[in-house]
Every structure is written in C-alpha cells, then in structure tokens.
Image (cartoon, rainbow, N blue to C red; front, side):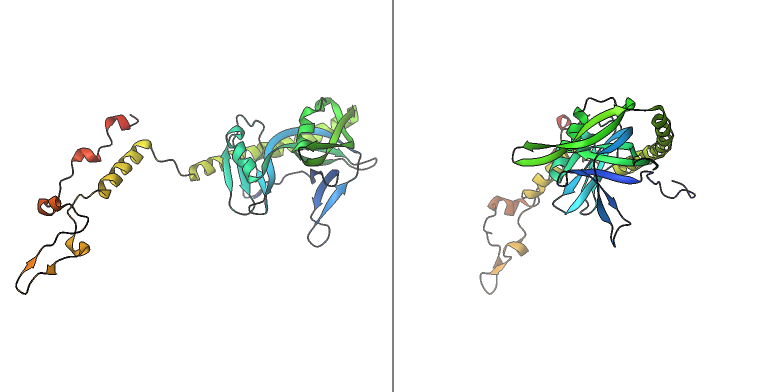
Length: 290
C-alpha cells in the first residue's frame, strides 16, 4: 500500500458462487436495484482456469453474518486469518490446526478459482473469481481434467444426498483450448499475478500484525508461583482480626477480656503473627522449565 495506491483492488469483474437452491452459478451485482441484486448465470458456462487458491468461507449463524479469510496457495505452509463481518470472531493458524473451530463457527474449506469467463461471441472475456465450497468444492477436486490445457464447461447439474441433506452439484466437463484463447488467457493472467504478488505481500504483514496483537500464554513457572501464593494467602497466616470476628465485648463494668472467636484456632490467638517460610514462595526447581 502506498500514497499513490491507497487500496489494493481485486481485478475480478464478478465474484461467482454456486447456489445449490438455484442449481446454477450466481453473483452479486451492486449496481442493480437500490441495494444491489443477486444475478443468476444461465448454463452452459465456459471458463479457463488462471489460478487456484484456498480459503475458508461460510455463514455464521451465531452472529447472522458471513465468514471470510485470506487466500493461500498452501494450507500446510501458510496461515489463515478467519474472521466474521460482524461479531468479532477470529481464528488464526494453519488449516489443520483451526479447521474444527472454523467448522463450529460455520466456515468451510473453499476453493478460490480465478478464471477467464467466456461470455459469448463478440464479447470480451472477463476475469472472474469463483468460490466453491461443500459439495461443489468436492466435485471440483474430484474432476479429472487438466485445467491448464482445457476450457472448463458446466452444462448440467447432478442431485446428491448426504444424510438428510439434498443438494445440487455442478458437473464439470472440458473442451479443447485453442491458441487464440490461450494467448488471451496469458495476458489476463499477467494482470492477475501482479495483483496476487502485492496481495500476498500485504497479507504477510497482516498475519504478522495479528500474531503480535495476540496475547502470549502465561509461562508454566509463573502460573506455578501464582498458585503457590493463592494457597498461602488462603490459609491463616495471621491470627483472626478481632475487629472482623466480633471484637472485644464487655464482661463487666471495669474489665474487658478477649473472647474466643468461632471458627478460630485458640492456639493462634496467643501465637501472634506467623512467619512465612520463604520456601513456600518458591515453586521449586522441578516446577521450572529451565
């Protein structure tokens, strides 16, 4: 980020997702209507894959809001920063370390496919982003297509059932990739890679900032000392305070005597303040990590 480029802008013209309910791909057009509208993409659709990344997305029922995260090339090597638009929920770490918590929140593993969408004869192809999660993501992963040498086609859907859940899934097929489309795709991918280069650089800084902002866990030896202190202060280190336990009472007109206090050890009344052994404050060599 710089003064001349204050905000990094994704070059994708459309952000497309699979809608199981509508059995087709959809995208949100912010220029339609007063507040924008969801648009259905009629089949068949054709696109050329430029790049594939991974992320986590979904819907958080707890806060009635969407879940989003940064995009990575490797879920094994690169950390994810998962957040909700509302509610302040946040997870951070490698996918395998946070996937259970992300699932409880409502997040799912998602394929983020950057593609060149073929819009029809006489129309310019568009750079788009296609998010695939759930059954649609599984269908994409299980396809047997070399995406670097083919045009991806979605002409039909299949109906699937998992337990009591029924859904529609896109069926991915392919057709030959021509030299003309290859050249257009290379030029479009160069624009995309320039964006991704800056995107990954900025996300690396954001991950570091998030890690610095996360409170470090308390070392075990400090916790051990705290526990020792709690145990000591919970015991009767001093005799009971007469002002708190009932104080002095009149036994006669000319004399005052100290009374025994309920729940107190009589021996302590004559003992005075009890010295604390310094060893009581030492967590012990065996308790320290060094």
